[in-house]
Length: 582
Image 1 (spheres, rainbow, N blue to C red):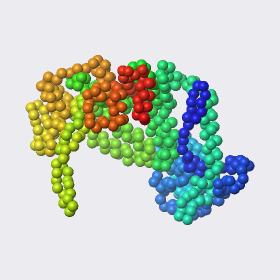
Image 2: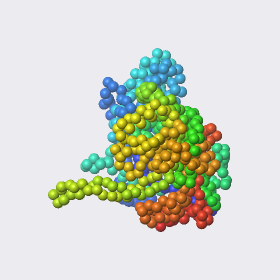
Image 3: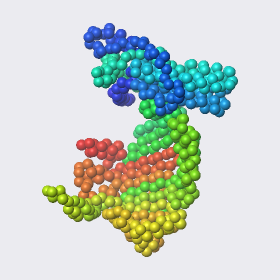
Image 4: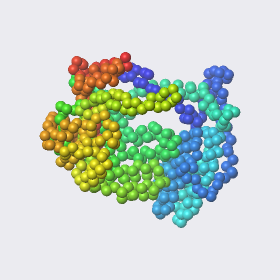
């Protein structure tokens, strides 16, 4: 931690032994030797150049595939092996597509990745060396065979030159022996222990110090950052091309899973900047979050967002009767049309050598899905209203055992927390719903009561009654028999404020929770512990809305009201946090 008059900087991390498997300790070792006696050093094994015999050729009958890439203790070596595999696939595709006139450009991504990984490797273990040579020998053989199949002499020569420039055996690196006990347990993490500790301390200190001095290129020169920054906000977060940056930060994880970091990043290349602003006012706390989209992902999002919520919903919402709601609104027909494209874009980038299989699967999905028929049944807009949470006594069957382990069936009671709710969604389809209802009636899973239906206990022992009906192109499901009666009879009394209607109407997703009403009206015996009581005493109202903004970004807004008696939003949040950890 470090601080000055303007800022406080915190840094935290974890020790990463795998980083040092490709590190040259020569310089730091000499520095420490000059500072302290030799007997104060940890056991040190000097890396020596001892190339593995690569004349023991692997089987060349079958080319190694994606699943044959060995596991290497040095993850940068693992990166190289996977990228070498992808390079082989890229060359194969170029030849099959008669696109060998400019291989340096066609294979540039793979070549650059390989050069980057190799430049970061200094030394490797003997066990890694053996596996590397065996794998590369096989892949190089088939790469050269592909290059020989190119008819154009100039292109053939270029292909062989690329192979020569990207093929590396263990002789390229320093090799140090494996260190293991009699049980084969690897103790390499103790090698150069003092050197690692010293480097860790130096790097951490240098990183903290770098945070306290002006940057070489200030973020205040970045137009994208300045465009999203609101000086009225108490806090701002911003990340340029955040998903690509995130993929870089966890790239080693994907390599461990056998995925090319470069291709995984391609999956998320349609995500742009992320920005957020926090506002703390007297009456409320507000947080806005924007995620920019582009390319195919933006077009997909536009298509599925191109839908208006059913205005008939507003005839069945009474805000005096609920403590919260959740609404969503998408174009189901377009969701089903775009889903295969989304799957293709995602998995073809990761499973690079399975593009034909992915294409077949997605085309089969398109054949199976009747987008129009499904969208008639489930159009894509719905509202869930939570009116109460109660505790009801329910009866259940238990078993008691005598001293001879003979069981006796007994009836017991317990309190269960159950919600009272109403759910509605647009559903214009009639034929299938009528067939389904007739089937459920014949099986006695439901029973008809006037113009609505009740789910029977044959399906499950429900602690509350559950009713449903179809009315005005809307499917209703509720625990209130009185509400369903009024809906069917066209006597339901709706009540909505203009702000509530606007939030649901103009958002792709929206949610609201009336914490004040919940704490005053909902009485649960289970809320007896100290933390639950503090939460209820400090409960407040909040809402979330989300949707497409400016036709190129997803905008999400969270607003939390400040309860009466609290000075401001900041004081309320800090007091609540203090109460919870007390």
